[in-house]
Amino acid sequence: MSGDFSADQKRYLEGFVSGVQAVRGSRGAPGFGGAVPFQGAGDKGLPAPQQQAPSGPDAVHLEAMARQEAAGKKLVPQEKAKREEHPFDAYARLKGLAAENKFAKSLDDFRIRFHGLFYVGPTQDAYMCRLRIHNGILKAWQFRGVADLAERHGGPYSHVTTRANLQVREIDAANGIPFIEGLVDLGLTSKGSGADNIRNVTGTPTAGIDPQELVDTRPYAKEWHHHILNDRSLYGLPRKFNVAFDGAGLIAALEDTNDIGFQAVEALDGHGIEPGVWWRLALGGITGHKDFARDTGVIVPLGQAIKVADAIVRVFIASGDRSDRAKARLKYVLDAWGFEKFLEEVEKLLGSKLVRAPAGALAPRPESDRLAHIGVHPQKQSGHNWIGVGLTLGKMTCEQMRAIADISEQYGDRDIRLTVWQNLLISGVRDEFVDEARAKIAEIGLATEVSNVRAGLVACTGNRGCKFSAADTKGFADQIATHVDAIGLTVDTPINIHATGCHHSCAQHYIGDIGLIGARVPVGEEDTVDGFDVLVGGGFGTDATIARELVAKVKGEDCPALVEKMLRGYLAKRDGEETFAAFTRRHEIVELKSIFELEDA
Image 1 (cartoon, helix red, strand yellow):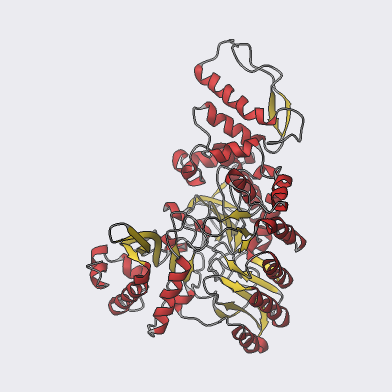
Image 2 (image 1 turned 60 degrees about the horizontal axis):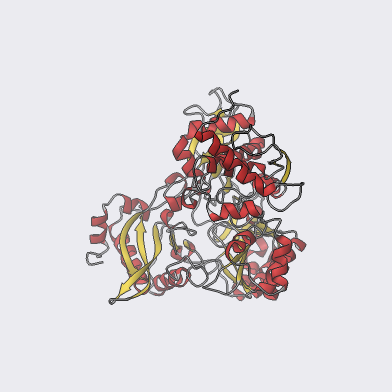
């Protein structure tokens, strides 16, 4: 082998060494992983033979960083922060900050997100803590325990999120660590629920009790949850990563908005593959970037899902962009490589070929019921029901949480099931106890019957608690539903209104029948007020469509009247029982503005 190296080779080696310097010395030193001797490549101005190479579970990340530096890319500050001090290794220091009643700031704010705490200044001088709850299901005693923790360490309330999760706000600097340690005492965790990690895994909310499901997603979500928690190499990805399992039940898990979506499907006989239930593999969902997870043509045996997901994540770890946070998601690797190249890399890690489903080999999936997350619905267990409880955009007081836990224990099966629609289900309620359980729910100020507009209303935190948001999403979303209900306008078809505050699209405005994304609306020459750009025609599942912009820069205070016009125009001009999404899609935007009387909007 020649002792001369090209400029590209030198850049690679220099970049590699800049990565491994963070792990020089013995195993357990600060930074990523341990270290083993690195054999130098010669004396052409290259590193000395004594240099250390990365090893251990963090080596894959260091090597990926080094490759990108060698290719002439500059790592973003978050990547350098992970290399300098792994966030898990920073725990003792972060706990010391808590003891001094100091918030983690700057890159330490990034590191503490690996532990589930988010400093949300300047909107609130406090932490928010996001849990990770696999398949969105807690035991009643855990739910009550979270309420107790929230009351002791944070604001006296919590929110159900759009990932069927819980988050607690108004946690001061001294209480952040006690809060997350209290979660562990409850058999829960917030580990890896923020920053560059695999987030909580979602699944069908009615898993195991759904009369139309093909797969009970609970064991798969649980296995993936524990697989992540017990493998440090699966932390510190180029960006966040979402995985969901949809068992084809009545309530959608929105798996097609995830980086990996496992969709339960039935393979038919006579197509050269084993008939029965498989997972169909969809990849690359990120609706904030206007993309759904796309069908790869691959089907996965039920028991192989975790192995395949692990391989997919590892290809992403090695190839994801660590120099541009805006392009650091799986979608952009797929866009650059194409699906076949990506799947070939996954197969190399697996050591085997993935199964492709021939055309016509899969039966159509059962359709979801867009209203099944609210009200009383019979389970597949005879004589039992789940009760969908409506929350005001996900919010519950601690008193309400404890009461819900009591109702679940007294009348249900002691499971509380969160949904991506920002509400919850009480399952296992026997027929003879349904009315009594509903009465108890009403006594605490919650409802089991709401209008279709209220049932389909979703909103992110908004600028009351998120510095990125341009508008008070929850406040104005609630005003919209309150207004429509107050004037007695009945929409007899399912309708989803999604209000999100910024381009991160936590409330997935692009998939709503009506989507609102926060915008600052000019008032006069110098001032602005909260407002929204308004979109129409989004959908998910078999109806997956990215919404189109209808009108821009609408003041938040004007949105209730605007939505009223849109709904009245739809009800007056629709074809039979045509859905709002189908109605808006068959008209051009200029036509819709005329129908909705928005010519001057």
